[in-house]
Amino acid sequence: MKLYLLSIIIGINTLLGITYNEVLSQNELESNSLNTHLFTSSSINDKIINSDNLYASPLETSSSAKEDFVQEIKNLGIILKPGNSYTDDSYNTVEELNACAELVFQTLNKVSVDITNNLKILTLYFNNYGRRGLGGGNTVILRCKNVSDMELIGVFIHELGHIKDTGVFKGDFLAGNSEFKDGSQIIFNNDLSLDFYRISFIDELTLKQGSSYMDFVTEYAMTDPFEDFAETFNFYMLHGNEFRSLIASSKKLKQKYDYMKINVFNGQEFYFDKGFSFTSIDKREYDSTLLSYNLKDFLDF
Image (cartoon, rainbow, N blue to C red; front, side, top):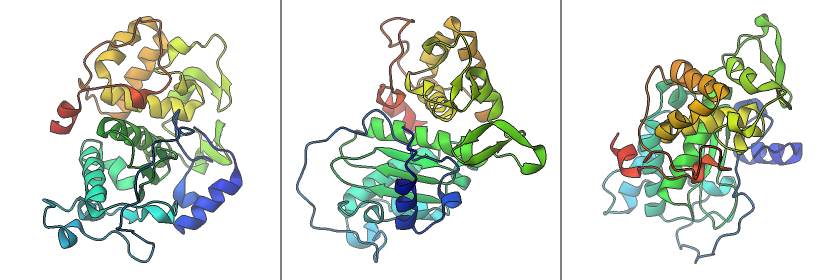
Protein backbone atom coordinates (compact mmCIF):
# COMPACT_ATOMS: atom_id res chain seq x y z
CA MET A 1 0.00 0.00 0.00
CA LYS A 2 1.51 3.31 -0.98
CA LEU A 3 2.67 5.75 1.66
CA TYR A 4 2.85 9.42 0.78
CA LEU A 5 4.04 10.66 4.19
CA LEU A 6 7.44 12.11 3.44
CA SER A 7 8.47 12.10 7.07
CA ILE A 8 8.06 8.34 7.29
CA ILE A 9 10.06 7.81 4.12
CA ILE A 10 12.84 10.09 5.31
CA GLY A 11 12.87 8.39 8.71
CA ILE A 12 13.22 4.95 7.20
CA ASN A 13 15.92 6.12 4.83
CA THR A 14 17.82 7.62 7.74
CA LEU A 15 17.61 4.39 9.71
CA LEU A 16 18.93 2.48 6.75
CA GLY A 17 21.70 5.03 6.22
CA ILE A 18 20.91 5.50 2.55
CA THR A 19 19.46 8.22 0.40
CA TYR A 20 15.99 8.39 -1.08
CA ASN A 21 17.18 7.59 -4.58
CA GLU A 22 19.10 4.55 -3.31
CA VAL A 23 16.04 3.13 -1.61
CA LEU A 24 12.95 3.60 -3.70
CA SER A 25 12.38 5.06 -7.08
CA GLN A 26 8.77 5.17 -5.93
CA ASN A 27 7.70 7.82 -3.42
CA GLU A 28 6.38 4.99 -1.26
CA LEU A 29 7.04 2.02 0.88
CA GLU A 30 5.14 -1.08 -0.08
CA SER A 31 2.79 -3.24 1.95
CA ASN A 32 -0.67 -4.66 1.41
CA SER A 33 -4.00 -5.47 2.97
CA LEU A 34 -2.63 -6.90 6.23
CA ASN A 35 -0.60 -3.86 7.22
CA THR A 36 -3.00 -2.89 10.03
CA HIS A 37 -3.45 -6.35 11.52
CA LEU A 38 -2.06 -7.14 14.94
CA PHE A 39 -0.80 -10.66 15.41
CA THR A 40 -0.59 -12.82 18.52
CA SER A 41 2.53 -11.88 20.44
CA SER A 42 5.16 -14.41 21.42
CA SER A 43 8.07 -14.39 23.84
CA ILE A 44 11.12 -12.39 22.90
CA ASN A 45 14.04 -14.58 21.92
CA ASP A 46 17.20 -14.27 23.96
CA LYS A 47 19.34 -13.73 20.87
CA ILE A 48 19.18 -10.09 19.85
CA ILE A 49 20.72 -8.90 16.61
CA ASN A 50 21.79 -5.27 16.86
CA SER A 51 23.08 -2.69 14.44
CA ASP A 52 26.67 -3.20 15.61
CA ASN A 53 26.51 -6.89 14.81
CA LEU A 54 25.06 -7.51 11.35
CA TYR A 55 23.82 -11.03 11.02
CA ALA A 56 25.92 -13.63 12.75
CA SER A 57 26.59 -16.64 10.58
CA PRO A 58 24.28 -19.57 11.42
CA LEU A 59 27.14 -21.94 10.65
CA GLU A 60 29.29 -20.22 13.23
CA THR A 61 26.69 -20.30 15.96
CA SER A 62 24.54 -23.36 15.30
CA SER A 63 25.79 -26.85 14.62
CA SER A 64 22.34 -27.84 13.33
CA ALA A 65 22.40 -25.37 10.44
CA LYS A 66 22.96 -27.27 7.21
CA GLU A 67 23.71 -24.23 5.08
CA ASP A 68 24.35 -20.57 5.77
CA PHE A 69 21.70 -18.84 3.62
CA VAL A 70 22.53 -15.47 5.13
CA GLN A 71 25.96 -15.75 3.59
CA GLU A 72 24.47 -17.03 0.33
CA ILE A 73 22.44 -13.83 0.08
CA LYS A 74 25.50 -11.72 0.81
CA ASN A 75 27.38 -13.64 -1.87
CA LEU A 76 24.87 -12.24 -4.37
CA GLY A 77 26.18 -8.76 -3.60
CA ILE A 78 23.18 -7.84 -1.45
CA ILE A 79 23.70 -5.78 1.70
CA LEU A 80 21.74 -7.50 4.46
CA LYS A 81 20.60 -5.07 7.12
CA PRO A 82 19.74 -6.16 10.68
CA GLY A 83 16.02 -6.07 11.36
CA ASN A 84 16.29 -3.64 14.22
CA SER A 85 17.90 -1.06 11.97
CA TYR A 86 14.35 -0.81 10.61
CA THR A 87 12.37 -1.47 13.79
CA ASP A 88 13.99 -1.77 17.18
CA ASP A 89 11.61 -4.46 18.43
CA SER A 90 12.89 -6.96 15.87
CA TYR A 91 14.32 -10.03 17.62
CA ASN A 92 15.28 -13.36 16.15
CA THR A 93 17.28 -16.48 16.73
CA VAL A 94 19.98 -17.48 14.30
CA GLU A 95 17.79 -20.39 13.21
CA GLU A 96 14.83 -18.10 12.47
CA LEU A 97 17.00 -15.78 10.43
CA ASN A 98 18.51 -18.62 8.42
CA ALA A 99 15.07 -20.12 7.74
CA CYS A 100 13.79 -16.81 6.35
CA ALA A 101 16.99 -16.26 4.40
CA GLU A 102 16.59 -19.70 2.84
CA LEU A 103 13.15 -18.82 1.43
CA VAL A 104 14.47 -15.49 0.18
CA PHE A 105 17.51 -17.09 -1.44
CA GLN A 106 15.45 -19.82 -3.10
CA THR A 107 13.05 -17.22 -4.48
CA LEU A 108 15.87 -15.06 -5.83
CA ASN A 109 17.16 -18.08 -7.71
CA LYS A 110 13.82 -18.35 -9.53
CA VAL A 111 13.57 -14.81 -10.87
CA SER A 112 15.60 -13.20 -13.64
CA VAL A 113 19.20 -12.24 -12.96
CA ASP A 114 18.54 -8.55 -13.64
CA ILE A 115 16.17 -8.44 -10.66
CA THR A 116 18.64 -10.16 -8.33
CA ASN A 117 21.45 -7.91 -9.53
CA ASN A 118 19.33 -4.80 -8.97
CA LEU A 119 18.40 -5.76 -5.39
CA LYS A 120 21.15 -4.10 -3.37
CA ILE A 121 19.73 -3.65 0.13
CA LEU A 122 17.59 -6.18 2.01
CA THR A 123 16.24 -6.01 5.54
CA LEU A 124 14.67 -9.08 7.15
CA TYR A 125 12.89 -8.15 10.35
CA PHE A 126 11.15 -10.16 13.04
CA ASN A 127 8.31 -8.89 15.17
CA ASN A 128 4.69 -9.77 15.81
CA TYR A 129 3.08 -7.10 13.68
CA GLY A 130 3.84 -4.51 11.03
CA ARG A 131 4.02 -4.21 7.31
CA ARG A 132 4.81 -7.50 5.62
CA GLY A 133 6.72 -5.99 2.73
CA LEU A 134 8.20 -2.73 1.54
CA GLY A 135 10.05 -2.32 -1.70
CA GLY A 136 11.08 -0.43 -4.78
CA GLY A 137 14.15 0.75 -6.64
CA ASN A 138 16.91 -1.44 -5.24
CA THR A 139 15.59 -2.11 -1.72
CA VAL A 140 13.27 -4.60 -0.03
CA ILE A 141 12.21 -4.81 3.61
CA LEU A 142 10.47 -8.06 4.55
CA ARG A 143 8.82 -9.25 7.75
CA CYS A 144 9.71 -12.86 8.46
CA LYS A 145 7.60 -13.51 11.56
CA ASN A 146 3.92 -14.52 11.80
CA VAL A 147 3.65 -15.24 8.10
CA SER A 148 3.55 -18.65 6.48
CA ASP A 149 6.25 -19.72 4.04
CA MET A 150 3.72 -19.51 1.23
CA GLU A 151 2.69 -15.98 2.17
CA LEU A 152 6.26 -14.75 2.70
CA ILE A 153 7.28 -15.90 -0.77
CA GLY A 154 4.17 -14.28 -2.26
CA VAL A 155 4.92 -10.95 -0.57
CA PHE A 156 8.59 -11.14 -1.59
CA ILE A 157 7.73 -11.83 -5.23
CA HIS A 158 5.33 -8.88 -5.20
CA GLU A 159 8.18 -6.69 -3.93
CA LEU A 160 10.51 -8.09 -6.58
CA GLY A 161 7.90 -6.99 -9.10
CA HIS A 162 8.48 -3.44 -7.85
CA ILE A 163 12.23 -3.95 -8.25
CA LYS A 164 11.71 -4.99 -11.88
CA ASP A 165 9.33 -2.11 -12.49
CA THR A 166 11.09 0.78 -10.74
CA GLY A 167 14.67 -0.47 -10.59
CA VAL A 168 15.34 -2.50 -13.72
CA PHE A 169 12.99 -0.79 -16.16
CA LYS A 170 14.27 2.77 -16.15
CA GLY A 171 14.38 5.30 -18.94
CA ASP A 172 16.60 8.36 -19.27
CA PHE A 173 16.01 12.09 -19.43
CA LEU A 174 17.05 12.35 -23.08
CA ALA A 175 13.76 10.65 -24.02
CA GLY A 176 11.71 13.34 -22.29
CA ASN A 177 9.10 13.14 -19.58
CA SER A 178 6.09 10.85 -19.81
CA GLU A 179 2.66 11.57 -18.40
CA PHE A 180 3.45 9.35 -15.40
CA LYS A 181 5.28 10.25 -12.20
CA ASP A 182 6.17 8.03 -9.28
CA GLY A 183 5.79 10.44 -6.40
CA SER A 184 8.31 13.13 -7.26
CA GLN A 185 10.21 10.84 -9.60
CA ILE A 186 9.81 11.51 -13.31
CA ILE A 187 9.15 8.50 -15.52
CA PHE A 188 10.83 9.02 -18.86
CA ASN A 189 9.31 8.18 -22.23
CA ASN A 190 11.62 5.22 -22.89
CA ASP A 191 10.84 3.47 -19.62
CA LEU A 192 9.70 -0.05 -20.55
CA SER A 193 7.06 -0.05 -17.82
CA LEU A 194 5.01 2.57 -19.64
CA ASP A 195 3.56 0.04 -22.07
CA PHE A 196 2.12 -1.77 -19.07
CA TYR A 197 0.89 1.33 -17.19
CA ARG A 198 -0.94 2.63 -20.24
CA ILE A 199 -3.11 -0.46 -20.54
CA SER A 200 -5.31 0.73 -17.67
CA PHE A 201 -4.09 4.17 -16.58
CA ILE A 202 -4.00 7.67 -18.07
CA ASP A 203 -1.46 8.75 -15.45
CA GLU A 204 -0.44 7.52 -12.01
CA LEU A 205 -3.66 8.81 -10.45
CA THR A 206 -6.25 8.23 -13.16
CA LEU A 207 -7.83 5.07 -14.48
CA LYS A 208 -8.89 5.01 -18.12
CA GLN A 209 -12.55 5.57 -18.73
CA GLY A 210 -14.52 2.33 -18.70
CA SER A 211 -11.96 0.49 -16.58
CA SER A 212 -13.33 -2.28 -14.42
CA TYR A 213 -11.94 -4.50 -11.67
CA MET A 214 -12.32 -7.25 -14.26
CA ASP A 215 -9.28 -5.73 -16.02
CA PHE A 216 -7.04 -6.39 -13.00
CA VAL A 217 -5.76 -9.55 -11.33
CA THR A 218 -6.79 -8.23 -7.90
CA GLU A 219 -8.62 -5.26 -6.47
CA TYR A 220 -5.35 -4.02 -4.96
CA ALA A 221 -3.90 -3.82 -8.46
CA MET A 222 -6.36 -1.01 -9.18
CA THR A 223 -4.62 1.22 -6.62
CA ASP A 224 -2.16 2.67 -9.14
CA PRO A 225 -0.04 1.48 -12.08
CA PHE A 226 2.85 0.47 -9.82
CA GLU A 227 0.72 -1.83 -7.70
CA ASP A 228 -0.89 -3.12 -10.89
CA PHE A 229 2.57 -4.08 -12.15
CA ALA A 230 3.65 -5.77 -8.90
CA GLU A 231 0.39 -7.66 -8.39
CA THR A 232 0.36 -8.79 -12.03
CA PHE A 233 4.02 -9.86 -11.74
CA ASN A 234 3.19 -11.95 -8.67
CA PHE A 235 0.03 -13.37 -10.19
CA TYR A 236 1.79 -14.31 -13.41
CA MET A 237 4.49 -16.22 -11.56
CA LEU A 238 2.53 -17.95 -8.79
CA HIS A 239 -0.97 -18.21 -10.32
CA GLY A 240 -0.33 -18.79 -14.00
CA ASN A 241 -3.13 -21.29 -14.54
CA GLU A 242 -5.64 -18.94 -12.99
CA PHE A 243 -4.31 -15.96 -14.91
CA ARG A 244 -4.70 -17.83 -18.19
CA SER A 245 -8.29 -18.59 -17.22
CA LEU A 246 -9.02 -14.95 -16.45
CA ILE A 247 -7.72 -13.46 -19.68
CA ALA A 248 -10.72 -14.85 -21.55
CA SER A 249 -12.86 -12.32 -19.67
CA SER A 250 -10.83 -9.19 -20.38
CA LYS A 251 -8.83 -7.92 -23.34
CA LYS A 252 -6.82 -5.70 -21.00
CA LEU A 253 -5.93 -8.66 -18.80
CA LYS A 254 -4.73 -10.52 -21.87
CA GLN A 255 -2.59 -7.51 -22.79
CA LYS A 256 -1.11 -7.57 -19.29
CA TYR A 257 -0.46 -11.30 -19.46
CA ASP A 258 1.23 -10.93 -22.83
CA TYR A 259 3.28 -7.99 -21.57
CA MET A 260 4.57 -10.04 -18.63
CA LYS A 261 5.26 -13.06 -20.82
CA ILE A 262 7.20 -11.13 -23.46
CA ASN A 263 8.85 -8.24 -21.61
CA VAL A 264 9.39 -9.62 -18.10
CA PHE A 265 9.60 -13.41 -18.21
CA ASN A 266 11.10 -13.89 -21.68
CA GLY A 267 8.36 -16.25 -22.83
CA GLN A 268 8.39 -18.47 -19.74
CA GLU A 269 5.06 -19.52 -18.26
CA PHE A 270 4.34 -21.01 -14.83
CA TYR A 271 2.03 -23.67 -13.41
CA PHE A 272 2.38 -23.51 -9.63
CA ASP A 273 -1.26 -22.95 -8.75
CA LYS A 274 -3.92 -25.63 -8.61
CA GLY A 275 -6.10 -24.06 -11.25
CA PHE A 276 -9.03 -21.70 -11.15
CA SER A 277 -9.78 -20.96 -7.49
CA PHE A 278 -12.11 -17.96 -7.57
CA THR A 279 -15.77 -18.62 -6.87
CA SER A 280 -16.55 -17.29 -10.34
CA ILE A 281 -14.77 -15.66 -13.25
CA ASP A 282 -16.46 -12.40 -12.22
CA LYS A 283 -14.76 -12.29 -8.81
CA ARG A 284 -11.43 -10.71 -7.87
CA GLU A 285 -9.67 -11.16 -4.56
CA TYR A 286 -8.15 -8.10 -2.94
CA ASP A 287 -4.59 -9.32 -2.45
CA SER A 288 -2.64 -11.82 -4.55
CA THR A 289 -0.13 -12.57 -1.79
CA LEU A 290 -2.80 -14.37 0.24
CA LEU A 291 -3.83 -16.80 -2.50
CA SER A 292 -2.65 -20.39 -2.25
CA TYR A 293 -0.38 -22.15 -4.72
CA ASN A 294 1.68 -25.34 -4.73
CA LEU A 295 4.58 -24.38 -2.50
CA LYS A 296 6.45 -27.64 -3.03
CA ASP A 297 6.30 -27.26 -6.81
CA PHE A 298 7.60 -23.72 -6.50
CA LEU A 299 10.49 -24.65 -4.23
CA ASP A 300 11.41 -27.62 -6.43
CA PHE A 301 11.34 -25.50 -9.58
